[in-house]
Length: 336
Figure 1 (cartoon, one colour):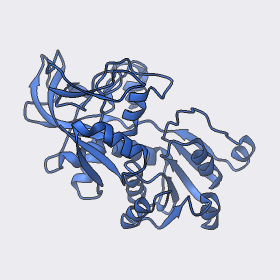
Figure 2 (cartoon, rainbow, N blue to C red; figure 1 turned 120 degrees about the horizontal axis):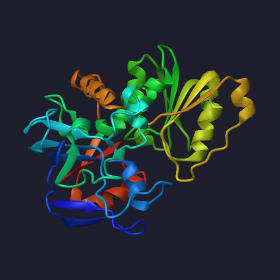
Figure 3 (cartoon, rainbow, N blue to C red; figure 1 turned 90 degrees about the horizontal axis):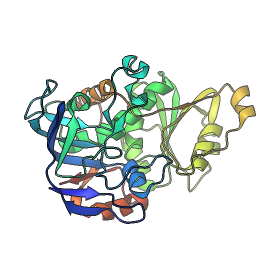
């Protein structure tokens, strides 16, 4: 099979011919139809984060495809099912996090495309228990971005406790941001889209944003303060300065939700203002299998729209450069 491989952190991704993997007990072989390109894939390929993958590894954790073979003991899915392969590739199922609905915090977890081979390939093996069924009628190229970008931002909106009438600022409109905006609106929020690209802000307007802020043209803190400040700020741009701006735009009692992971790994947090304004700062990790199932149901019901562009898997390095250069309006989805 053809597969993308991280061979070293200072080298481009390689396309290789690899054997089709065999599913073991509790596993399935999935023929990949579509695989979203997440910024996490780029961080993985470049070793940007404190915890690095161990090359060689196949990246990709927004994989959607058809189950072709099942290993011993699989009862969750059957051959022919369309399933999604999310970031949480496996968890222990027995720790306090797993049994209380926070499986994404499991300390023994294995992550698709990071600690285990992922979906930027023609085939992938996945733990059947952690694959999520894609509803009939949902296009695989739309399901792929929902598998990470969708469920991650859906969870962030949940964690933020968005209530009807809340003013919600989304910092970074793109593959994640255009979905975060839609979820915030479904929860009743009045959304403010913040970005540096006119094309992305136009997409935000088309999706129902009440306000847009071009951070190249105006100071986003001043612009949002003039609107009365934000009740919630969800940060999806991997830049410490943006996180600090998001904090400063909050009203008293506001909630700052951190989703992006800047490679610098630090921000300047003003303690005095945080305490006196009663601001909550919370980190939001990807959603659970149950969250992803909800995301798929919302999309199947026509409540969300996925903006994406299809690229060939062989063109992954060009796709990475386009993402890094800001030339992509929303999500790139790779087709094996």
